[in-house]
Length: 374
Image 1 (cartoon, one colour):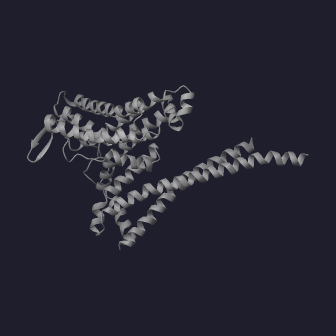
Image 2: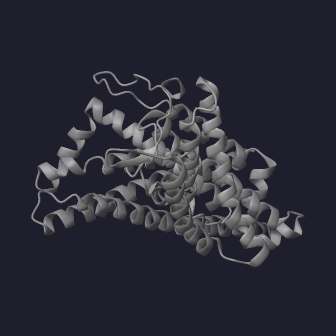
Image 3: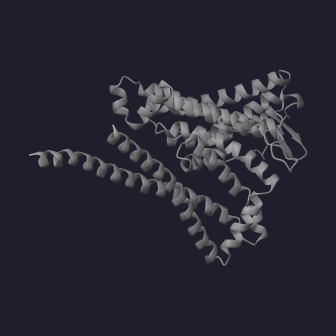
């Protein structure tokens, strides 16, 4: 019994140590590379990092980071659902933008009053996102078309359809801006004064993002569907042998990913701009891919990654005050993602080697004992 507990505790300690080492290595690597880039451009690294730290500690900045990070987190969840099954849903960007256009048009028409209109907007958004994502899933299972190719093409088609809808059906010209009608005052999601020292409120959709994160964890780790999804992603042949319908799982996974993608634009539509125009945020789907990789498809890891990414995105103005090009932020983001991938791969290989050595020692121990007894 004592030997078993020792082995179990040893494995737990090893796993916990490796889980801590990977992000620390990634952060260290990112700091080193970024410092080298700053020195190469003649900028002081310490002054730069100090300015970023001061900027991030301001109350208004914290609120902005949370608001932007909420959108990033929902986007990362949408991407991660596909990633867990080895499906690369590159079309999240098109799915949320088309969903936002249609939802904005329906919401601006005020077909229902108050909260009912909010529910209608959200339902329309998730349905459009799900249907648009389902196209790629159906093409994969019926024609063998890679979801990477189909979703990239669908992004362009979604952009064109969205522009056509705004121009011909939903758009209203105000001055030089063509946009959908504004969501009525009684159909807007209020913010929350969570951060003292600033009048800027945190979007109410941060609660939705938290619920989605919990649902993501429970769905993938505590349900049969999640088990089948992960099993199919690890080995399609083994999934088929176990009686899992791989084609069905591909379509359903794409649909679920599209449902979450449809919610990405809701914080902006229902809590900030209240309309869809040329100023509506773009590229959130591709940001979600980077954050999903950064967070290793883990609900908590992606939340931290979303806040970090939001902080870096919103810090470019501060760097410009120091006469540092804002492109440095893009370099930092790229280095962070790359360093995380490298660090986790190194730790993963070390874990395999350590496990092999442990098994070898356990197998050798009985043989040595038998030899001594003889």
